[in-house]
Image (cartoon, rainbow, N blue to C red):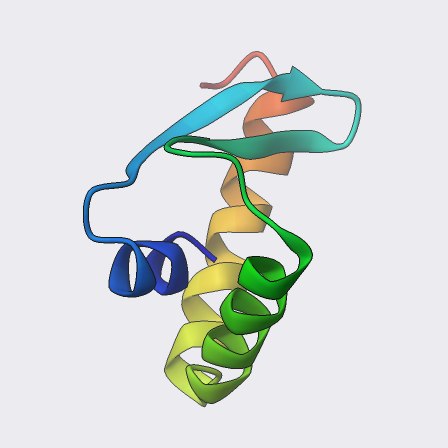
Length: 73
């Protein structure tokens, strides 16, 4: 999602929001988004799905979940 937002809104600053029960969420420092903006972002995200992206995403989710539930990180 961050890649899509940065492509469509180059001035947007991406941060990781606080931890929540199931991981974390992204936060963006930018103007508020409209429903039209969200549709554009979704369309851009769908166009970026590839096996490599899914592998990297899966690996990141594993690491975050492992670290969130372990004393090892």
